[in-house]
Length: 193
Image 1 (cartoon, rainbow, N blue to C red):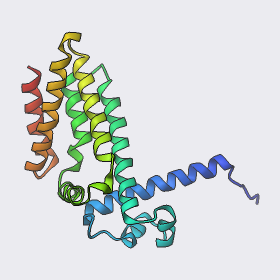
Image 2 (cartoon, rainbow, N blue to C red; image 1 turned 30 degrees about the horizontal axis):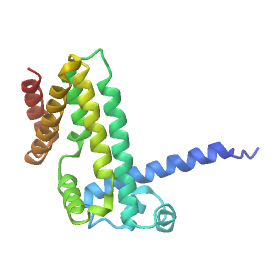
Image 3 (cartoon, one colour; image 1 turned 60 degrees about the vertical axis):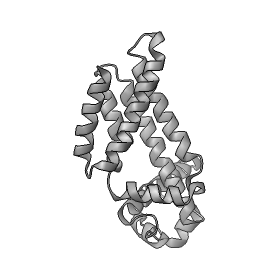
Image 4 (cartoon, rainbow, N blue to C red; image 1 turned 180 degrees about the vertical axis):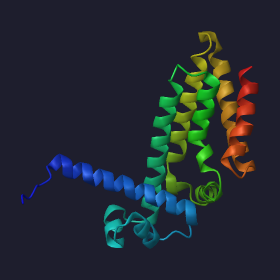
């Protein structure tokens, strides 16, 4: 029986994969219990890691929350970018799929809890609350503008801002993803006319 050692690159990849898995588990745990009620112990249990191991990766619940939200938003924006630039699909469908990825999957208790956490502790997420939404808005604007003439850039900006505002409003008025998508599809259809 031979003992295989991991190379430095493989060890780094395992560490990165482990961190990603911990952050995914953390986000699910925060969504399930809410920010205030989630403990590091619960996250460690969900991530199948010891509590000291979790504290080795993240110094505090705030650091863990910030990293989990940042990772989720980064993944969402990357997926939105991929969706929007698939030219084999109509712009309406690409926009709807993009909004579903960006906001539709976050409907429910976590949405309300995160809003309260951000309002009560604006420093908790720092620039994250501005950086990723701005990037999302740029992607939506550019996708709409790509369908129009260069002189219609201002219209593309206005349409994107209106779609985003509509998405935010609808997200807080519905209780499930299906209702969100149904109402947002109607709004996108009206705005693209």
